[in-house]
Length: 337
Image (tube, rainbow, N blue to C red; front, side, top):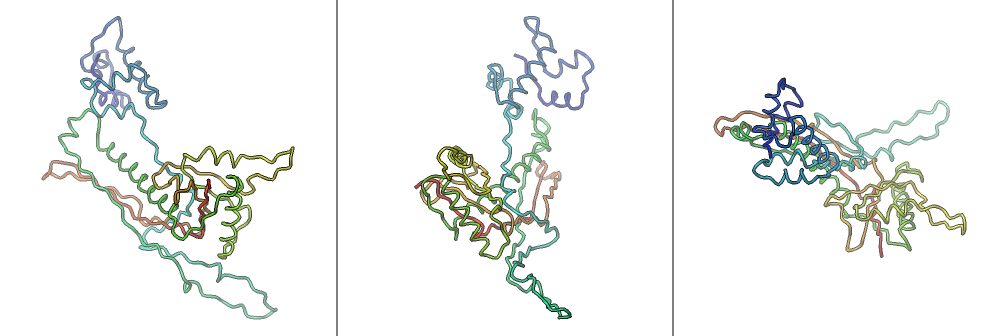
């Protein structure tokens, strides 16, 4: 089997430089044609396997053989065949995203008890109520960073990776860190009310939605009975939850067992989104927005420099952010007894 220089192939595909058969052969290093196989056929075969592996995760026998041939494929080639996992960004819909660029903290006031409409007589002076003196929650900027050292010699001799690959890995790791942080907040059970299982999942969800909306309304928020609610659950509970949310009112017996509230399920396999809370299969019902706040104080900044003393390229990235998810906007929903 021919040895394939994937680095040259990548550059050839993105910035074509091949203008002859000799140039094509250079993409593969030493090519041993057999059974009348042409260079073009070999290229198409490899590209087809790469496409199948990357987009369908369907490895043919030849693709598996190629990956398992450690003499012909280096570690970097795995990236060409194995589809990179997409980061779980579903957490963003639970928060009100605010831009706090340049600040060192974000103050979250409860204006509902201050800004009120009152009736006045004609000519009566309107009372002014100061804002800013009320109790508020404070989000201080938190710093998150990563440092990567790439040896110059390795960069110049490996067959696949370059600095851009490290930057892409840093970006993915950044999204993963935010997901962990967000789901840890949303699934924190401290001070959160638990709604007990009642007969079946759909009835329990109705009970939980009613209790949560009542709780938020009682806290002074303007919220309607049609308020969109998000049910955060581990993917393992998808079947039972979807069945409950898709229950329709029976025309035959007049059954009232139906999801009566505007609930949409969000599933995650993040380690913080557990299948059980206190040994009971559970999910977290959340009122999104309001005081669920995610503040970005300084967006991601990346710097890189060549360090001659270590003969390496050092890359550092940092970002400042913080978030909160008050217990009053969440209820634990037990999905089983």
